[in-house]
View 1 (cartoon, rainbow, N blue to C red):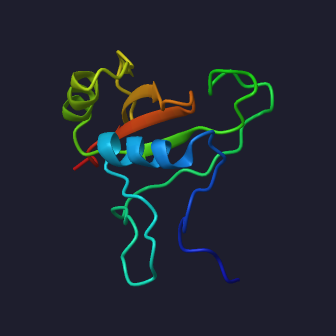
View 2: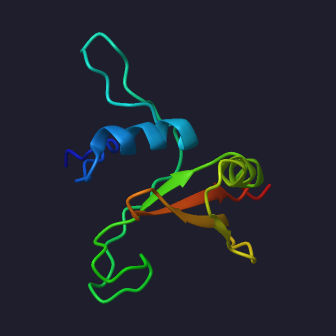
Length: 124
């Protein structure tokens, strides 16, 4: 069976797409979509990716009308959280680590939920 090899893009509506793209670039390092085919797009590091539909009634994403949440892998959660907080962005770090790593939550300027994930080191 042929299968996909990964995410090729994440597309969503925004009230101010240019401003929101700038926020993601400035605070999370996700570069804007290139304006020409000769310019490279943002490239993610290889690593685990979870694709998980949730029940329509979930409260995990925050607002009931929110249909999605994006999760970004990070190398150093503490450094990323410090950087975001220094920029005046509210970030909630989950107190307890999970077997698969550590997590934090924030929202972009339009209220879209973002989860940051520092994967656990593989067991030796």
